[in-house]
Amino acid sequence: MGESEFDVIVVGCGIAGLSAAVTAEQHGARVAVLERAPMEERGGNTRYTESFWRMKSADAVSDDFEERFAANAGGWPDPGIVKDAVLERENQPRVLRSLGMVDPNLVATLAEEAPKALQWLQSFGVTFDFLPTYFLSQSTTRMGPVGGGLALIEALGGYADARPGAIRFFYETSARSLIVDDAGSVAGIRAMGPDNAPFDLFAPNVILASGGFQGNPEMLSRYVGPLSQFIRPVSRGGHYNRGEGVAMALDAGAAPCGDFGSFHAQPVDPRSTDIEPVVLTYAYGILVNDAGKRFTDEGPAMVDSTYEVVTRIIMGQRNGIAFAVFDAGLDDVENWSIAVRSRVPPFEADTLEGLAAAMDIDSDEFLATIEAYNAACPASGDFQPLRQDGLATRGVEPKKSNWARPIIKPPFRAWPMICSNCFTFGGVKVDERARVINTDGDPIPGLYAAGEVVGLYYRVYTGATSVMRGAVTGRLAGRDAAG
Image 1 (cartoon, rainbow, N blue to C red):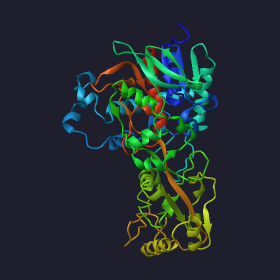
Image 2: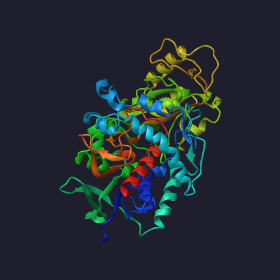
Image 3: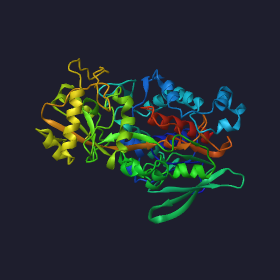
Image 4: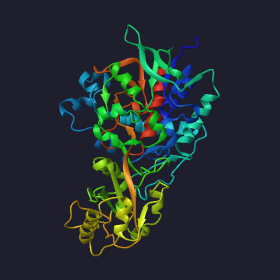
């Protein structure tokens, strides 16, 4: 086998790519891994996330796992087509096999394979536990690796580094297009190395694990729309995700899947350079836009299940920005600071006029908003920050459904918030072996997808499943490609 010839080529080096590469090597394959980042920044989004998994134990996913995926499976699919999903895949009509909706068989595979993936990662020295999150309370169960996603990258990367004869890394290198033979089978990758130097790598199997397109403003504008100018990747790793994996698969005839017009949204402090500088306390105060007006229900339900919807509403405000405003009552919430990951101090003042000046918003509008909100808050009630307490406003629009208390006691504080893009939802359809399915419902020979390249989510992210998806689909792809 020559220097440019391999059994498997993996594009990307996050949890999906490394899981694929290491699994393929463990099954006897010689593997090439292409990574746009330098070695010291390898790992994509995974490197910068805490990597929570929606699991109730090391042996089982959460009780609501398949229920939440079913609830977010994609619009209103045609029941006349979907009814045949109960059939074995080979007996399903082609239109169903390529339909742009979440495949329940794939979700079932994720549920079945997630514990195996977790235990496999433990074999590399990773420890999983029920770790603290930045949510003050949770509506589901989550586990995570001690050391976060970086621990996963270091464990799998360290294993791969120790086997240079079997796994070869090409850093600061991007994949540009697939090489496909006359029979329609994948034969390799056309890549671009440092200094704009093109070269080809050859293999009968290619695994696309290069993330979404959150780092590509052209694709964001095309799919998400003009408001995408107000969002940015939540972490440094996201800037490396330019969407080539998704684009290459679509160019090869892959069936699109997942919500191309949406993404996993998180509310962050735009001033902060911290990793994932979320501000998740807003339910205990109010949200105003840069005109000084409220625009949404700040407390519709538990924050961990609603923040994504609220964050997208922030994106739609003028200039894509909002402010989470609090009085001294925020200190009634024990340990509230764990839900603010920005280390930049908030705007603070002893008067509401002073706070408006610090935020650089219209003082008259802001004061009128506060006055109307305060008058609508209940006169009494039992404030319970860790559950839905039913303290709701009356006679003001928009309504606040829980945790409504007047903003009257100094000091007054505010954090700016914008919508950040953790990862995009649009990708390609795969089967239970992570083989890419074409628009006619057939697998594309030799082509696999893993991680964010796999279209799985619609509008609302099923929380704590993205790194899990990467590990599971990476292992499925690596095992099949090496087989």
